[in-house]
Amino acid sequence: MNRDLNRDLYAASAAALLVVVAAVVGTGIQHRDGSLRVGWPPLLAVWDPHLGPGTPAAIVVAVAVVAYGPALAVRLPWRPLLLAAWGGAMAWTWSLALVDGWDRGVARRLTTRNEYLQVIGRFHDIPDTLRDFTRHILIGSPDNWPAHVAGHPAGATVTFVLLDRIGLHGGGWAGAFVITVGTTAAAAVLVAVRALADEHLARRAAPFLVLMPGAVWVGTSADGYFTGVSAWAVALLALAVTGRRPRTTGFAAGLLLGLTAYLSYGLTLLALVVAAVLLLGSRRARPLPFLLAGLAVVPAVFTALGFDWWEAYRLLVTRYYQGAGGVRPYAYWVWANLACTVFVVGPATAAALRRAGTALVERAPTPALRLAVLTAAALLALLVADVSGMSKAETERIWLPFAVWLLPACALLPRPRAWLTAQAVLALLVNHLLLTWW
Image (cartoon, rainbow, N blue to C red; front, side, top):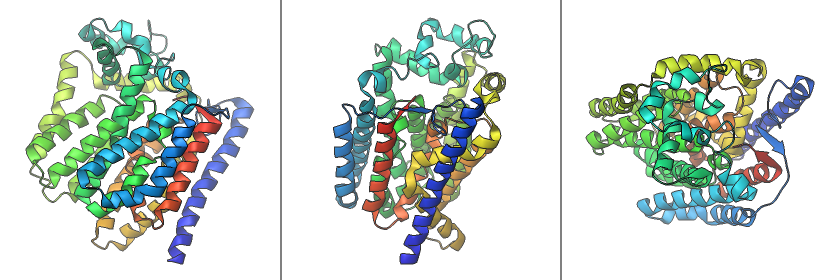
């Protein structure tokens, strides 16, 4: 036991060392030539120690989850546990967002010059705008889209246009929507882990999903919204391949996977997680026709409305290298991106991934092995995104949909309260010492 604990601490220490090296080397590069294009390497943030109205609430939520979370996760009936996980994640994310105050922490996040709400007025006629979408992707094109609009499929922007159309105007409503949807990922991951591994491991993972350090970026970047949608796509597929209403859940999973692809180009790599779910499913063939039928719906709708996903992606690659992506050095970000991920998943996950790796090597047919396969698939997707060079910097938000699937590995850790404390302290320090841009 002591030997395993020491190895856990070595893994967490190695993750911390990676962060320190990324910060020191990155600061040197940024001071030398500014090519990293971030204010506090490796994070897109600036040094700004501060307190805010969310500070007391964040501390109370952290203490409550550390003190009572593991016991409640064991005792609560399953459905109330899912609601409690969502509610706890909501409380944690809202409190962290409000450390920066309502305006700076929530209402203005999605209204800055690179964000989606800047272009709401250009979508008076949605089909017409979608037909014309690709003409405004490149820098230098007439009325070129802001960075995030150009950098994502049209489904991301259309979401916020539709929110505005139903009367939820402005950054406050957009931020509340992102937090509400994004925090449901905690419940979705629990559903998937229970279906594919077992309920005991899902229950042990619950407090870690609530106190995810990445909640700093779930509230409120649009990637939090993408995380919620993609997590439920995987969860529904997990239900489908384990025999729970395979027609309904299979079709719903396909529908959300199709939507995910139209929210972020990079989330096509979620196919690796999907493959792991199919591998782990005992009835993987039965829901496939319904999965494929659902998967076709969103692409068919957007294509019929005039949006060409493949052409948009081709132009995005050019746009990426026209902007910061063409300046940021690959040789730094290919490893510093992983330091950004440490801020999202925390030291507990670094230790837990070591245990998951051990389960993979030993290959004993246990729930721990099945959980390890799921987390390994998410880690592989993240590494492929890293090597691609299309995710240089800002991965603390961009990789949220992959990172959330690494956290369940924390179910393999003993002494959960100590590890939960480390997770909470990391998030509190980041949110109070830095001003993140998302």
